[in-house]
Length: 344
Length: 281
Image (cartoon, rainbow over all chains, first blue to last red):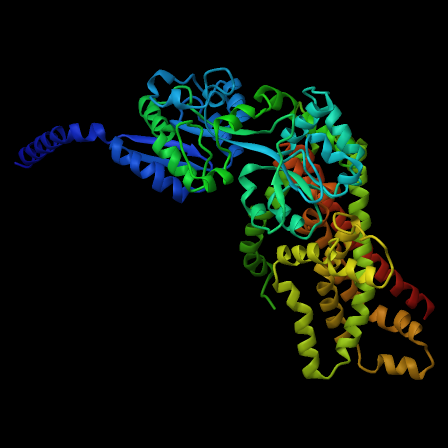
């Protein structure tokens, strides 16, 4: 008797499961790995709307890029995440380690709306830029005139500037541009590091946190510093004549990119998600909240928003980014020669 | 107190296990990295490499120098302040001690940032110097060893004062008057009476201040930056930027060794004076 009950119960359960299975097929999970910044806004603008569209569940893992890359390496044989966002150089590092795959851009409707600079930043088809930033010089226009990156080291200016430490994100790009200004543009940045080293006693500080610069500018400790555009807004509110330089060598900067792990289980869903993130609507919303500068050239924003971001085709075209391979291969060497010439 | 040693050991065991598991073992693992060579064997090559680099030598000597300078200065100011405080009337003593402790309750970040304003080119120090005609152009104090020295001294002076206050309070009340009556001048009173009787406090305060200087990260990072590296800022650079855990482990070991050395040295100095006195007696 008991057996009969058990059998009929099992049969009932199986029927119920069969009836539910079409719904369960839709109940997919997409796991993404992103920077920990601005997650509330991302949830509102990107994650929640996407979950509505795909009828899937989004799992968000956050952390700094070192941690997240280490995790990808550890799970190489059986990837946990379906897509990740990292810096250009980290994307190349992951590509070299065999962790990521080519991205099938034919499946991305919004791919052709991207600025050229964002379409394939590392030239290996394995990453797509979703946001970028310019690095140039914020300076006191009443005290100095900046037409070239080399102007910062002029004798009359050098004792009034802060230079980004080589260990910061802005350090290598600023040295890269100084090298161009000096006409000695080598991957080891030797000439630029030497030039900064010659002025190390004059230069006010080699900053590590850009947040410190606003205060130094306010109390006139410094007149100028190379900064990323994403830290520009507070300088405009100081009530001082601070301007954003457009040196003749151009501006530099950095870009964040999307990547997909090799052997990811939900590639199509990941592509759908990336396409959504790159869409004009989502990129516009992210720009309006000052979260990310748009990589989608169809995005139109107000002047106020544009002033706080790195915006527009001209800007995008003018950015001279350090090639990822150069950054990866030389990073240790830069720090070594910096410590020898500047650090002591 | 205990029936047998086993009981005492049993009571100490949980704390000992806890300390071993969360402190000793991780520290040993961390430090052992510095004694590994790339092939997995044991060696001191990482230390030889570290000390053969001129930058590291400079940073090591600077850290030692600033730590010692801050400790000695804190001791000098600390004795004066503590002596003044213990001689206050009881109500006042509590209030003034409270004021000494107060800065310890404020975040070192806020305190250090305040120095940026004070020591800046347009800050109060430079304005005063210029008003007094001591200097024509504003001095560059920020991002120098001087700035770090001032920052560290302000950060750790309270620890020295508190240690010395409790040491002075434990001193027999009539020791100083007795010495004075017997004809000792103030220098002799300090050297022969106060210092030997408060050496414990000096050793504790000195160790706290010196160790503090070796472990403070925020102050050297903000007031010195990468322009004036100390061992602690170099350690951070090695871990978070260069990803060089071996060098970081070497620096960690050096910092721990310096703390222990300072403690032993200070104790030595104190006991050496004791022996002298006993020998003289």
